[in-house]
Image (cartoon, rainbow, N blue to C red; front, side):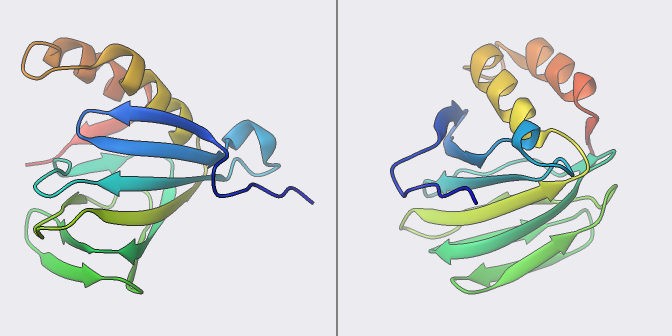
Length: 144
């Protein structure tokens, strides 16, 4: 049994969002990683796909607007979204308060993607080439 306390985990800043890795994929038999993501108002991600990972988001507080090229879903605390591999998805915090969600992925080391992003990408558009390289290395692709 592994117990991770509320104050434990590796925290990295991925552009506007603070990601805390609660369970690294290399500590899981099936490559499960679990993170919390704190999203300030207005922050979010573009629409992307993951080549391998199956992902779940569970909103703990605040609100998220989940989006695909053709859909919009407004999620609030207690709502969940399941994303099979290759499912286009992105999110944004449309509210005036910070949002927080729990995310877990199976099938690939998404936690390593967050760490690499935090190390390599600090400001856009200046670091756009580095961001694209990190995304390609981890099987993440932007979708318009």
